Image (tube, rainbow, N blue to C red; front, side, top):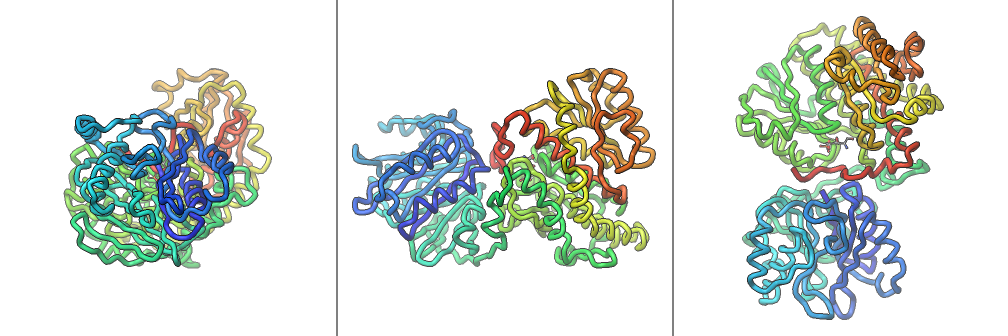
Length: 617
Ligand code: M6R
């Protein structure tokens, strides 16, 4: 995880770095720091603070004017991997120099796997370590080369050749104060292009207030930034040409815009996010068009494997349900961190669908690589243009949720689910597995989903408070659903545990009797996601079993459903074709988790121990 940012150009370096870090804080918030090349002397000065970026911003706010005239520097926001959150372990890390300041400064995202050997080797040569981080070896290796007279770019190339693991690293040297160098291997890094200034960052959203034009840096490349040039080269000094790409996200999308938290804002952005994801892909008759994917002849596909983590995995489970129902193709859904080590097999008739909001989850990328090993075709479903997964996949189905800042995924989940429904319709159409009338009916239902989500937000206005009261004194929670509503239950449980820290289990309602029912008492509320028809009846019977054991029940049910006879609180959702109902049933679960966490006084956007992009194993 961690976020890095770099800047060279005008006398606004501090502002750019802090703004970039603010927009990267979702990647980690254990500490934050910057290193600057001071004007006149060119010396490097660092400032770092433990805790969220606000702590650093406060300290920097007390500095004199000159501090803000700096024209180049690097910054970092940390999610601790090696060494606890402390000032010593906070980045930037420095190397070389004299009592007036260091010779080089480095920020790093990733893990240096051979750091212990390198540390011993460097200690043997007299280097003293000030932190417990893996990153500090990079600073000393680099400083050693720079002190030997190597130009910064060459010194970085030499240093990188010694590293094993994953990294995106940016560095600066007192000898070249107008230059920032950076490189990556497995961790993300983009360059932002400006006029008389250039930028780099872990993700495009760090720089949206400054530019929409970007360059991607590939594994094993070094980028050299000055105010007027950006050069990319290999570790062996060969220049590389790279095309720019433009991002259509706006800087306003990452502002709170009057909401108390990003999570709440993003829940309310779901109708628009769905609308944008469906636009141009579903016509007025409900007929899907995914020709943009250039999937070619789909008739050869015999099997689908979905790989994903966390919330994206839950979206994958819903995708399985829809694809199997509509296209009658077998779908396996695998947790990416398991799949990558499972010695997976298949052939070119296997379509691997890799789902990742960020497009940079390490395990999902590794699962894609494993599938490549047996010749699978890979389709990525991602929300992030220019992300790593877009480089690794054969084709990309972009969700258009816009940037999501809250660590808990909300609008990106609904748009992933919508994208998978589109895929299911496309596959079904190409295989003639359902009549065109049936498919058009689902297509039309999907087209109406933005309105339906708007409607559910309206229906829930002022209603979730009662459900939050059911959670007073709760020590855990059980989320139940069946069929396509079981993944919704899983997602509800994940939302609750990640932001309220209450243990929560998502379970198939019928399976509950085989263990989890032992959890049930007055302090373990049951949240039941009811659908229609036989599955509703069956789930309701299971719910009655929990009521008999003292459970306080919250039901997510169609408006007008009589679930109130067993549930203390019913959170209503509008009518929807049953297959698509998770699109509306998830919304009350998101709001429930949000309000329970708020009632517990917690920071919903930055839950403890988590980061939004999981770029380590
Ligand atoms: O960026 P990705 O979609 O690959 O992220 C996967 C998970 O880390 C993510 O969904 C995580 O579970 C969320 N915090 C859930 O809200």
